[in-house]
Length: 154
Image (cartoon, rainbow, N blue to C red; front, side, top):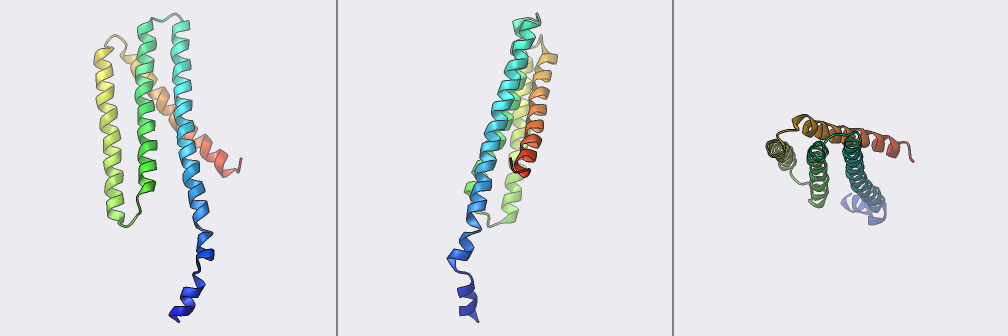
């Protein structure tokens, strides 16, 4: 019985599972990079629009500061996701603890960086928060759009 089971699980049959996993991992890394680039593009365009609209350079810098924090948050997500795929999953509790740690790490880094930028650019808090919110909205919208694009097979 044991030998029959062993013969059923030949490497050739099991190997068919592995390539789709690698493709999904690679697709997720590509998607994360695309989201970060899109965030950068949107934040730069809005900061340029703020300048063209006649606002002060301080306002454009504030939009860049808030948007930059959002971009760093997206980059931290991408980095942690790529690091998580490098570790084998043996202990679900350890994985859950890591997920909580990563969420707390991102939350604290955003709070600290927003606090610092708001202190430094104290004349433009609305622009800092607007840049951050715009960056986060871009992150969410891009993730949804890229997920739908991937699922539709494009």
